[in-house]
Length: 134
Image 1: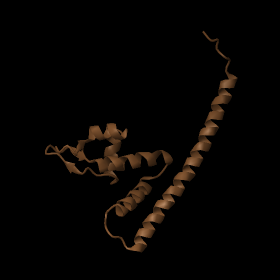
Image 2: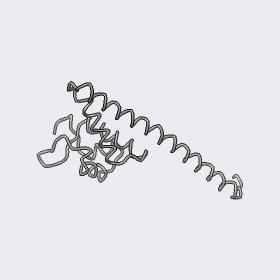
Image 3: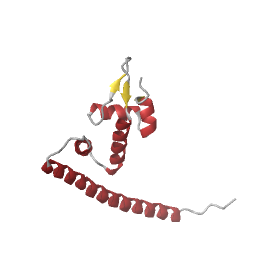
Image 4: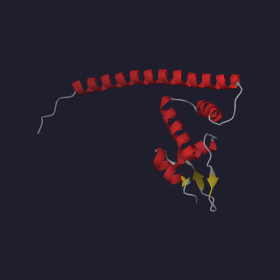
């Protein structure tokens, strides 16, 4: 195994994702191991880890697997090093702007939900008798 490749266990630790989740993302085509060892073990690179971190960050914001795929496809195209026709480049950048706008809206929505949950917790705490301090 090359020093630039890592097995799925190390990737799981680095990304804070379970082995099952990483395999699921492979099954859905979001991330593919860059190689396989002679024994058939999945091998990943830093780029694969970075891709999984993007997915992990999108998940709590409620992005679907298809939305994740669309974002990753756009960033893959933009990062390919290929000379892109200006129209395609503009379309890909607009797709990224759309994800940026959606992310900001979802963050706003989550902050609202968190504030409501904190208010609820405070309401419950007010209803409980205070326990004596030791």
